[in-house]
Length: 267
Image (cartoon, rainbow, N blue to C red; front, side, top):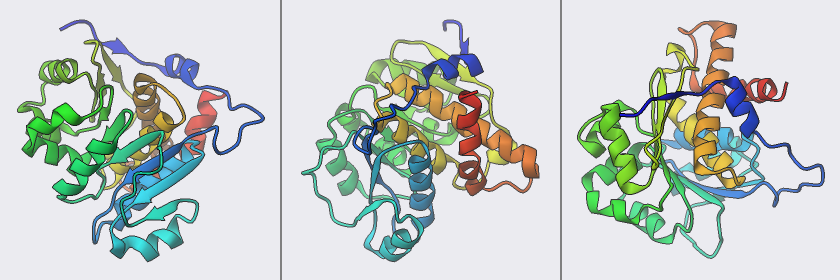
């Protein structure tokens, strides 16, 4: 395995683009988040709020009918969809947080995806059970497994095997942990040491999915979206830890400190 490249503040700072002064919501992209089965509206809320905080112009959420009222109230900035419609061209699609096992929905999304996706959680677990479907995952999509999900999908969570899988399927794989590694289709591997154990809490991965989806929809490359997303997520987690300690952190604290993470990149 080739050398692993350490990603530091100056590296990600150079990736962040200035927002044009004459920009409008169409300038900053339209994403679709496919998230939240019955009883899992919280995952959709966390992913959606973090996506909106990432600077995106417009967000739609495809979720279960049972989540309609709570999402309309908690995420009023988003467009809510409970029925599938594919007459809209999205700049990025994120799928997985709180999705549950719904093979029909995943297959439908894969068939209609026109550009790289962000794939997390239950969507990864379903792909593990349908390995032939990997052929339908758009190239340069970003998968964000934790080690157990990687093991289900690949048969191993070793960095070497994850990298080999990324090369084979022409994907970016964010192997979550501390440190987090990003394996690229080129064979390059990046390591990011931001973050802390307080982020090992329910919903933290949903927040990361939202951030990366928002960046991808804004026109950042898959590599930039993965690296920037992991750094912003981890740095927001570190700001949360500074405020309240690792024991008391919850996923919403990471979203609350995303503005501080962006400010650090802009200074």
